[in-house]
Length: 436
Image 1 (cartoon, rainbow, N blue to C red):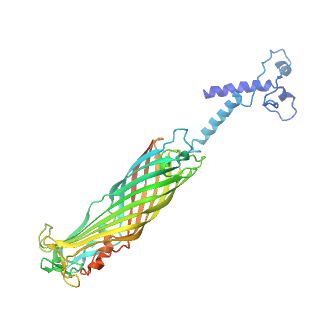
Image 2 (cartoon, rainbow, N blue to C red):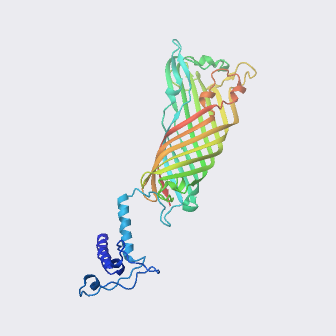
């Protein structure tokens, strides 16, 4: 149809040019357009065939033109089609959606695979003869262990082109317990000499042991409620995650801001145990356990921003960073025990007190999250989201800095948690977003 329309335009233009007297009488540069009057309409008098050829050809009816004539519109339409074909769809990506097609609600879900960067650790057991390190609570035993989790989010967009909105997000990791176990003739590097257990000094149960083990696990949870906004050229936040409903005048770049309240929970559990009578842990009276539980609850506000770039009409890349300062409510529990009860302090002001430490404290902590990823728009409702995330906490209580190595009689000192630790997670995510 378009080719037929184009062929039809040519003879009409030729006839129009022949029917215009101003064209053959004007000594200036020739023009295919008529000489327009003050009203924007061509002169009523047209040149007939006889004036041009000098013969008796039947006259052609005059053709009236206006500035919005159908012929002009046809030519313009063909030009637009040609221009769009030459651009191949690479200009003007992520332009404003047609009226009524923008979505102002969305929900998304992603799967997470992340690992923990361990700050340090210590050797917990050595060979009793050679004193070679045998049992480690450090990086090579408990680092680079990938764990799974998930992320859920939902939001409501409002304002011009749905550029602003409010969002709820939760994500967390649910790792299992990791452990390192060794067998042999072992001594512990942890000095339990300030404690008694089952009628003997506690060091008796960690000297010449047949088996020793360290267990460690952690869990991470984050919940946030944010206000966000995208710039006039779009952005990576909120409804910018689906389709391209934010007008950007053809620019592929977008920017956004975010701010709100966030709660972060990090807990760690540490267990060291030894047995001097056999090489299995079966609950016999000669087994000694040192257990520690740490909880960090961060409450505070965060600010951040993001940038996006439309690579094609479907693929958008982005980077988003969020940082905050938090009040960290830290709680801890520590004890040394076995099947015969809890170990007791054997010297100092806390003599005969059971070694059970419970304490809470409030300290300042910081947290930052950085996401680098991309989104593939399946259609104007669905998109696939993928990327890499780094989450870092500072000013938290972790096992490496709170495990007691000696001085178990100092209950007050142990109760004062060490909150100088850091905790770093990093890994990938993959999910989908739906908008309506």
